[in-house]
Length: 408
Image: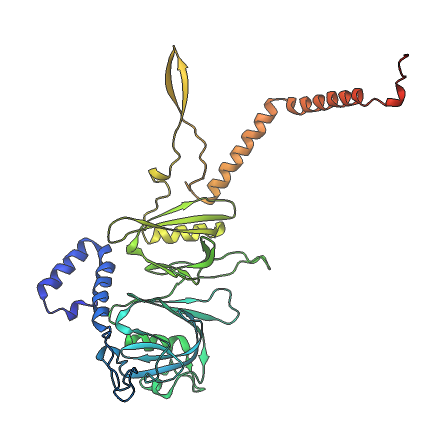
């Protein structure tokens, strides 16, 4: 709990820690509530001080402590911003704010800025299907829309101002005078984030995918899975403590403590769907549906869900097929006979992909044996029927010239 050190009431801190120990899923909600009120305190007053010399214009000297960006740390130049803007801007890191600006100093009015105290989660994930190795950095806040920008991995020179060279380790700075962009980003985030704010990336230990490429037929290693939300195509990233979907708006970040259960549905030969039920303050679970996941990724996704001990609700009672009731008459009274073998409309996962394939093979064998039991009578009856139809057609096809007119 990063806010515990800032609370002077020791009894209150003890009560909050006791509540979190009993109900761990409450901790993200408590953090969000605290950050919400902190954000309210930092908002500037709506009343703007006017400059007497220029009626109707705000005073350039007017400022509030909440709008102070703090000490300037560094600026990363010409960064591709994906959300909420979509343009190249400079990222200005200060102790109190992270800004996307046309300038290189906090004094220049930014086009977008977020207070560092409002940052609650940072995800650094690989950019899918990119020729040059790059990462997307997703910064989630307690109130505003996430800030998402891209960085190229490896040594990049000339994008960091001189102010950023203070206190850098040799592992971050390079011999050519540049910086390895991703480690330098971690270095800056470590200076501006509150204690306890997670910075997470996908890794092989938690999730690794090896799909088959369509062009070469070879298997490749990747840390993400393609998935849709409704008609929007995107990718799922399975982080150590959360599941992230992007990069179409809006981004979806689900911490493990916020996920009530996971259900795998509509498992077909090529794709399957995954439905996540989430918890909220009102204890009414909402639902997020991800569709069109490749079936070859199913085993890797299932292992991740099991390893994180997220509840699998694929075989929950509300997802089972409902029994069919058939009305029958016995002894003059109407009774209801339950069909004990109903045909479900949608197949719900009950095992691995190999088991599903085996089930389909068994059904094909039963259909084959059923055809043999008829001794080919179905085919013969069709042939005989066709012969009768041809004879009928021959009888109906009469040339009018062959008939002689009747005598008057």
